[in-house]
Image (cartoon, rainbow, N blue to C red):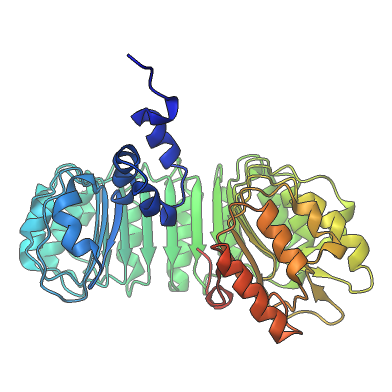
Length: 467
């Protein structure tokens, strides 16, 4: 019996298929029967179902492969086939039968984005015994439904609520939620109810807050953290534009260990704030201090990147490129996402930028590089220059790079630069920015070259926040 080639073994093929880009998998599935069997489960594993998509007709045939399903049919009445292996379901303005939800009682994650949940859905939710995470968005909750929500939370591990109006009644005052570990809250009219709910979640480890609470609520949050209400809290995201900075400093001061810190409240980093952050440098994996911080914060970026070995994502407003060129080597070699505004003195860019690129070249796992986040450049400053003559070739180690964003900076790239990128950044999927802002004919030629190699040229990213 002839031996089978290793690349024909289903286990090997499935493993290889998992590394192929999502857009290339349908083509790979047409190569052979073996490849079809390896790629089809991955193609149908995570499905976004919208009107007029071919997946609607093919769903009955492949539904047993679906593990994550996002249904955004925008008020169409639609009943979906049962997906026996479904783990996560998102419903946006879904008007089909609620029995579809009950048929998937084995799922662990459910997100509902509807103005008003159907009453029978509130009856079905308690029957989802495997549910571990629930998300509710733009939903009005009655007093009776509030009691159902709190009962659900006694066994949930994660809760997400956005724009939900929750009455301050019910049995909350007599309950605790020992299983809840992750909570995301955003844009609520009444933050006090959620604050009381949070106080009854002793195992809370991940907390994300969005919106603008009243000052008394910010004080209440800082007070509870100081009282060690959540001893396991390590991941903290705060996008609350109106929170006073003294409350934020109090929060950072009293968190025992931070792995994730995200806030857009800091306009400037004071020495005292940095002193509070330094004890967490060895545990930080994600740091976002907001895109609108003052240029004075640039002095801390070099210290962070040379002191936080576990960082995987970092977003800072500005960075002092001279300090980077002359500073200690960056130690954050796990970094996959880097977003900062790099600014140079035009008189010294040819000397300083190659040395800055040598620091970036250490980040060989990098997948997204955002080099220009600010639209307000200080006088006598220029953004990064992505030309070979100014050190682009130093970035040849970024073989995993998939996204590069250079914002509103005026680039003067030519075909040499684009061909170099395509040759060295073999995983490149998207480029955002004007490649050549002084020669429209060359700009059009470069975009065509990118398209020919399957790289998307995207200007929309210049005007939206990268999540």
